Image 1 (cartoon, helix red, strand yellow):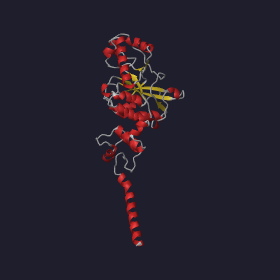
Image 2 (cartoon, rainbow, N blue to C red):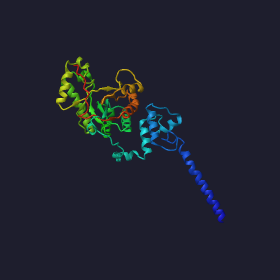
Image 3 (cartoon, one colour):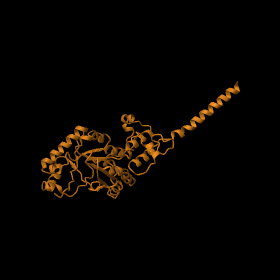
Image 4 (cartoon, helix red, strand yellow):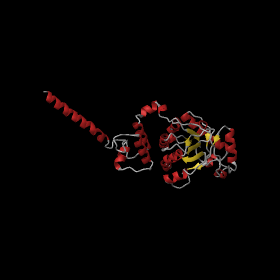
Length: 323
């Protein structure tokens, strides 16, 4: 009887060992998120997914299957974010309830840094767009902050508050972006500025005084509609308490020709100033800008730059006024 019981116990143990030893193999069979197929969903998997979705690496069919969590045939930065959440044990609901637990403790303004610190101010004009959420996800991945000079975009009304809630600066660009209307007179410009200011306030509860002129302070197209208007406006906005920003760097995504993400990256990474105010764009036509963003951030962070949002005390990078 004892021998039969011992044999039975031995058999059960062998079965148990067999089952448990097989689990890693089963888990490694391309389960969602396990891109490198090692049996674990890790931060490395999230990074692979992010690099793939912005065309920085290639995946075979099995890896793409593991990365495409929602099975829609497209690997997105949102999926990279979900993989990262899973890898570190954070659900979407937990993140909403405990945002302070996951926000990187990075400086938020220039005064938090030494005087000789290097700063990259990434600025995105013309949004929000269908890619704003992807941009925000990438910024989150790198603990980077940016500034969004927004327009009136009612199709993406939910994104204005999302920009603010995720710790970035929201700033005013224009309501209509119609040069002929905006620059027809001083009063026309300020009517347009007030409209976008009110819209942003209604969406976010934030009344910002950071602005960027359509075309920048040095634009000459305004001369076609009102001679000398930029000389007057650049003075008057400051009299009214606004701080206007131009730029001293650009990723060249608005030069009028189609550019690959590699060309955008190469245009963006050649600057060496201590404080870089970089012009970028957030529109439905600028997906290659999104693709290039991780490598741009990695380049500057590797060189000791802090990626911050603009404040009233930041470098304004004013251009010479030409009208």
